[in-house]
Image 1 (tube, rainbow, N blue to C red):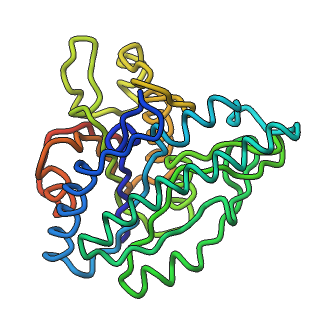
Image 2: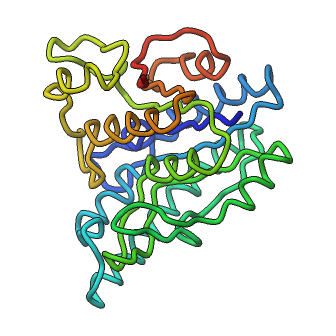
Length: 261
């Protein structure tokens, strides 16, 4: 069963400064993934990352999320794709340097959306890479959209499509906080449909520029996903804390927020 790991844009970039890559943070993360793979070499893994201060600044400038229709908006659409791919290349370089067999996958090359939701995306090469113990690397990107013309597809949107079409058992979401906080700034250990409405007021936006909605949208999307696939395990935790990612990959208990039934 496949594990999806999402590296938040706030973790690997400074979302308040355009195109600012946190290479030191990415290097530590890469070492933790390599450490887990060394212990479990056959672990099927797909890594995804947000666009952070690369794609989000560009997408906000052109309002790409809302739709793409005019020639100027289409030029902006292409610009967002280019700068999102630039961050993906930087991430891939660091993961490769850590000895990980990274296989880059460009979502916009095949993804088609319908009002923001992916309706099709090529998975054959991802499946072939996994079968050969390679690690596919996807990222938040643009997509042609049957309703909006063009739009942004977040890493969570891509993960939703992967969960629907591949045997995914868990999703690890790394940000720069210890989990989802309540109004008293305490980590909520579990979020379920039963307590979601009660904790919803505590879910704010996102520090810096984020065109895909911040924490509230992420939690809503992931909660819906666990309701559609009951065996799915989702954990939100702090990617800045050394050792947590490696422990989570190896199924060891860590501090964070679990989302599910």
